[in-house]
Amino acid sequence: MGEWRHTHPATTERRGSVSAHGASTTGNGQAGHGGDDMPSVTITKNGPYIVRGKVRIVEDTIVAADDRLHMQYNRIREFTTQPGKSVALCRCGDSKNPPFCDGSHETCGFDGTETASRKPYDERAELFEGPVVSMGDDQRCAYARMCHQIGSEAWTLTEEAKTPDKVSAAIVGAWNCPTGRLVSFRDSDGTPIEQRFDPIIVLLEDVEEGVSAPIFVAGDIKLISADGTEYERRNRYALCRCGSTQEMPFCDAMHINVQYRDNSPAWQGETGTLDPTFRYEARP
Image 1 (cartoon, rainbow, N blue to C red):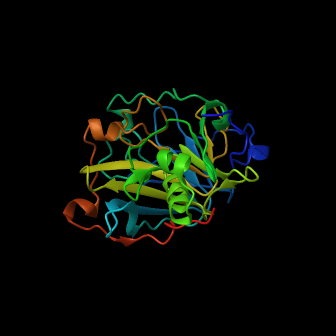
Image 2 (image 1 turned 45 degrees about the vertical axis):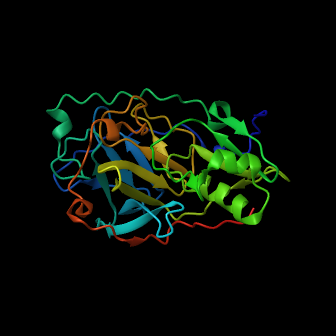
């Protein structure tokens, strides 16, 4: 490992303090008028996530690719939301209408106190150096297994890969990680290697593990604390929705421990088709 270079693609120049806005929720998840079109997710105190702005909300399964050499995201469905209105997504894990909030947090004793570190990624991540690309790792794991590639994993591939196919696998193993834990960058100039996303929220279903996985937020969507401050802007992050994480609000894979499962069509056998949002080949 080496000294971490401050090359993470978070748009830190847009970090700042904003005011949190309360919202009343109903059973269908609609939570009043969103106002600003700038995509955002606001954490409410011991309550749901409020999604505002132009953001698609979809549901994907995590499944093995046909060649069994990597995991992939398959699209099951897209949720219809009302333009100009915000959406309340459950984070207590007790809603009877998932992924939407139905007010169950008020009766189940949910404690959503934010406990995760607020330090920037650059200060939390370790550096893994390689001959072509290097990779940062901040240890936030949702056990999506996208880092497992071509019989190896992103760390080994990063440190050893020299051929285009292995370098590509190292990058893909990092940039498809839903938590943003792994970030690859070019050794030649320190440029981060990230996919470009239109703002999207992906409800993940882990078919192999038999559980519902986190809320994958992609596309530089700002995350606002219940205290009104904005978290570091990230291209990718994963929010807990089982209500059991020890790194609130971020997923730490506790959905596997508690066997959290929602009412997704995945549990009736639907696995979907390859989601074109995500890429499985990369150029260094």
